[in-house]
Length: 470
Image 1 (cartoon, rainbow, N blue to C red):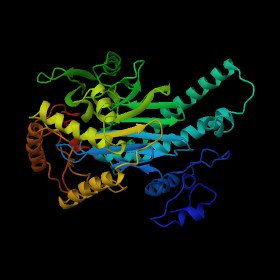
Image 2: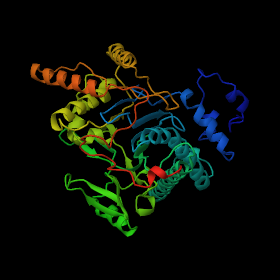
Image 3: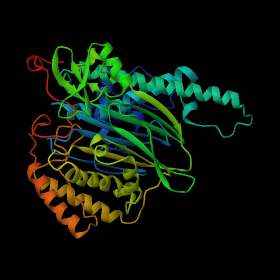
Image 4: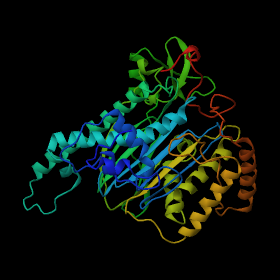
């Protein structure tokens, strides 16, 4: 299949499947002054090596500074995806992302974006910084030995870096959507995905996002109390700016009578698809009518008061407030269990608040900003996760492989402390959920069937069934 972009391509291409490869083998070193132009075959090779990259996790588990967890809802196959990639580009740089798919092929779109978008962002970051500075390493390595400090010059440099990072996020999202449109084996016409991505570099936090997944920051206030700071805006059609753009492009925005609180995007000539977000990857049936994949970008300088960041899909935010999420994560018995406990709490809230609705998929990334994970009870936590994985396998559910072809894990439970009454309610909820969500590998997305609270799509366009590919 050819070699990698790295000068040691023969070594990279000869790696065994079980052996880890370095980011340099993917041609993505941040410190190379000379960089070969990446070809399509290079991109394919990079994707094939993803499972061997160290410090990159995308299934339920933990890393040095984070924990991640996803749980299937009751609409069919899990369409959420997530990733944490530590040592991204360089040391002290971390990439995190959550992707919420929707539509018949939404799970495939979310996984595709999870795998390809970080590589594209890395490539564009390297490119724009090299053009602006002559060396990309200047942006990734601060120079504490500088003797002369010029505040004006520092501000100019900071603004320059901000502009470069913004451009990299914009270009990578644009390239991602373009690749989805050209995929011959992935129909994204009526399927798509949200994306919320961040790059943490030292105390700098850069974020790009589309759709209604959300990120919050837990920070200490002047009274040393933990408070929630929302870092993103849910980009839905109910925002005046988003609705105005869609209407100017001849799309329609209105809510259905039975859910007046949910504004949706509709084609000008058909009461479809009823998309519940204003920006997304894919969804090419409405891309000419105001739905875009241009991300919102933000930069924040973190302080010692900032403790952790939570990224999650709307399955969590539909039932839990920002403050509740912060309380749940900060009170978790171990940091490595925080994401799992948060998803478990969301699952219980779905049963309590919307007992007649289908629970949505949930995906959570918890990034702890002090760079530490607890050591106590790690063995107990690993045993708990292993037990959950075994239960999934006994139910005929295979964990997702890196190629994204296997099913996501089924509903997994933990044994957090509850009152007797809560335990009885929870046991009944588990029994009902397990009965309704027993999954096989060939089960399809069923988000348009039955009673749901808020579907991302209402129905497919009439002409979509006759469409032969993207």
